[in-house]
Length: 128
Image (cartoon, rainbow, N blue to C red):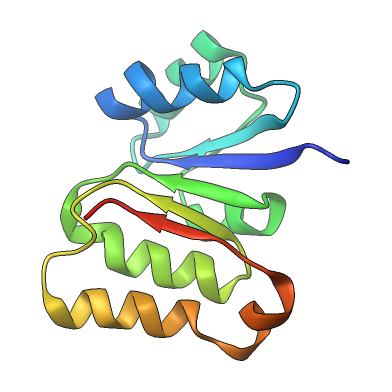
């Protein structure tokens, strides 16, 4: 079985303190391919600190190179980023809260219910 290629969207405290160290401990099952953050300098620092090979300032570009992402950004971006990742066929782990409004949550669920997910066995996990 090949390793899951992971990407981290947002490299703030939750990413550095929890998610990235956890993925590094799962190196037999997953590889952290890239991080994405709008702050390029911070993304570079985090990538260097944890030995992550690629950085992106636009998470859309990263979606082409990973199987799954963790979204650890400010809450107001969760829905937009989750929908984009799901529409790109990428598995999603989204930090809580799921989104800011019921409508955003519903958009996230609708994206997961796209027909190709029924065939791919894709996975989505969101904090509620």
